Length: 197
Image 1: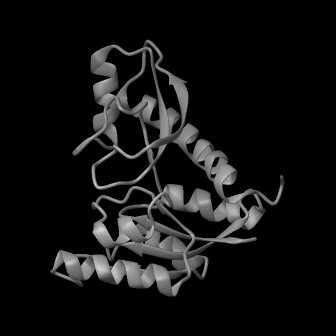
Image 2: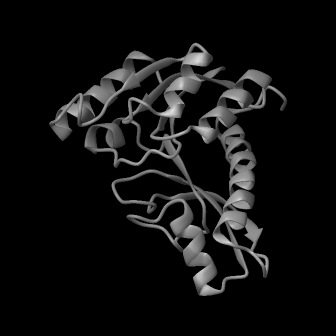
């Protein structure tokens, strides 16, 4: 069975591109059926359009009332018969309707070994700066379920990335992101299946 994915993204959509590529090459037995962004100018929307994927801009600009926005997102997901949701650099919290309707079917990646360096405001270079400041010798990537708290959903799988003595936030970020792309697809394949399996 080909699973239908929705990807929620706020910025450039590099994880989105990785998911699209994996669907198109058979690494995932799935199709990206919908991309939602809270940023009308996001690279994620541009990437989706190039691949003829349905897109929606849903944000406080389109729905000032958070409850209305929550309902609009659920309606969009339902109308596209979505099986699983991936939040890929999505910088907004999901609310009650989405979390309830799609419980245990919403996944996020985080560029550290949660629960280390998670929570509100911990994203991108801030995570890698914290790892280096703590003197950790390893970091990694976590794929976890999404709930009402930042980075606190059940952990599905983790992988480790060594921290090198001469790492900077940029070099560490580059290495973790490369791992994140591979690991996300491996983990999703275990959930939705792979045509290569």
